View 1 (cartoon, rainbow, N blue to C red):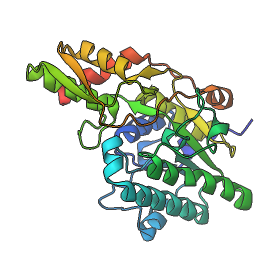
View 2 (cartoon, rainbow, N blue to C red):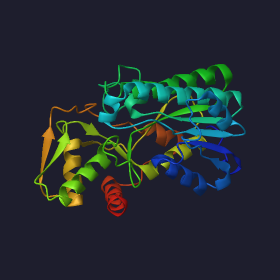
View 3 (cartoon, rainbow, N blue to C red):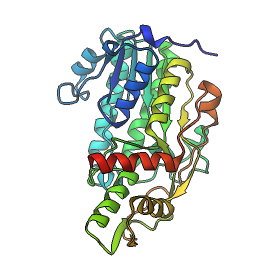
Length: 314
């Protein structure tokens, strides 16, 4: 059993801390006794982590780094900007971990992505399947850039004894998600579409793909709790899945969202658009075994909260 880190005494760099997941991770750190003034959140407009000097400044005097910052989007965004997805995510992570090591940071928590898994991974995805094939094409540049942080973390642990861990969260959702149709993921995209269709009294709502693909979703508060638990309790080279262990087809998801939003028209599937990875569902037993994480928020309850938030703020 690894020693438990007392976060209340640590100076923590939280990249991406002003983003969707980051705001919840910050709150969870505070819940665990970390003083607000000990959590440092660099903003991308003042601190572009693709620039080496900014990484050096960001890690200086910090004990723990939780690296959430990423350039990320849905299938459309990934298809339009594969070069940016690869370069930006790779450079931010690789430079930050190297500078953290050189600065004597005690612990580095790298947040990977479920997009790193091979396109045809047996379901449920087990961590040992991570290298058994190439990722789904629309996600590959992003998934592989993030996967390199696992290689780096394991190599640095081996050569330098650097305590870097790598977590693989599944698709997240919840209040405060990104609802921009150009870059949003499937749940916020469907919520926005359903509200727009209802408001416009549309007879139908067009959704990408066939609806046959499946996904697993994790409520953002649960994800934040998992990340902080792993920061406190996990110190091994093996990657760890962070998920809820549930699986739902996009067709069922679209029907559920339209029902909760109150859109009564027809869903039309645009089969000229890609489905992305055929299935996605994680084996989450390692997170439970290693640091006691299990998702708490039921899917429909989390969806209702997200819809409520969008109704109020969207």
